[in-house]
Length: 127
Image (cartoon, rainbow, N blue to C red):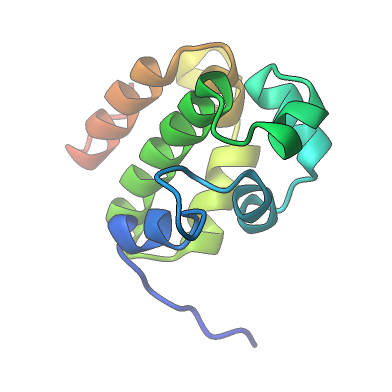
């Protein structure tokens, strides 16, 4: 049985910071989210080489910030279980919002819809 390491949202995001830089590391982000760099490039809608040559590019950083914001909200709701928050973000179809996952909404630039949805969940509503 795996032990659950409870962490807060700020600590989760801090772990993904590229050392010595002011940005999120694409490699650390991909590793933590259990995706390949190619998948991250697809989600952020950038070329894979962009993540390696210019990891601080605004488009990639914006996607990762939005994703971390949503995952962070879920971490706060579930008591800090990051694996469970990532699973929800990547795999749970949100039927109240048409069936897409939080990940697909963020990719489409609709992170605010997911944040509203999560705020409703935290208030006890389901849609």
